[in-house]
Length: 370
Image 1 (cartoon, rainbow, N blue to C red):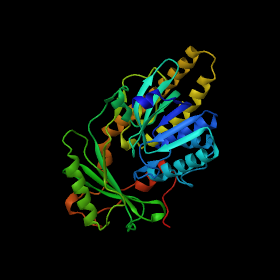
Image 2 (spheres, helix red, strand yellow):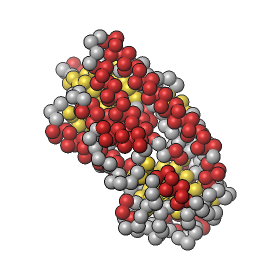
Image 3 (tube, rainbow, N blue to C red):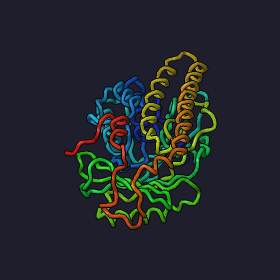
Image 4 (spheres, rainbow, N blue to C red):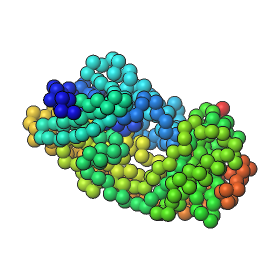
């Protein structure tokens, strides 16, 4: 470690930590502004998350500004895996075409030292354990809160524990559109969505928000439901996540600008997390580019603090909407057909009344069978 710290550090204008949709948008925006950029991701280049997501108009506008076509190919709903893979492909293309754009997979941030003129970042190769140092003028934290372990400000819990389990299956859907069922005793929801082109099924298990949720037991119940419905083995292991809201207590005031979930999470019922992260990433990179064009360090830091405050305000507004959605969850729950979840079959699940008018209103049009 000492030898790495004493070696000359690579210098970049922006280091982007984390390459989910928000981090990808930030890196592409920084590159579009001509900033020397290093983008790092602790995982590999292939996305694996299967959640259904809504690409909101603000996110679509941000992506168009980056020169990307409609990545949902005519629909506003898709999976987060689809969006990440499309954006990461654009990053790979940018890295091949731009000498000032670096892209590193399986690379994590091991230490951060913000200063008046920049941020000293220690990067670790996940395969070899080797570390190196980068001197970044700014860091965009798109890690989803993982840098809290390195001393970054922690997000406080702003809502109850809320476990959601999801997985994607190759079984072709036997249903049209979206179907589901609720358990009137446990107040749990089990929802099924056809994947892109009706090539498979995405299953959601939405537990009742509260401290009593047991992640291991819920995953076992989720797997048992998939077996009863003959969905087969999931494409990736079932993924359980606590989607409770978390929020920074105040905007960051240094050269590390958090975006997306690193600022604050919004409950999954609002469907705004990925779109907000994309908007955050583009906004942060464009603002940082403007800040770095200032002639004084004080003005540069002032602009940096201003964008952090602007993103914080966006997330605080989103957190209020998330709490409202949790408050009306009992009404959403009662819209679905009722059955005891351990005993359901393919004939049990179905759409709630008035579903398709709501789908057309929110998503633009009803999904079509291929």
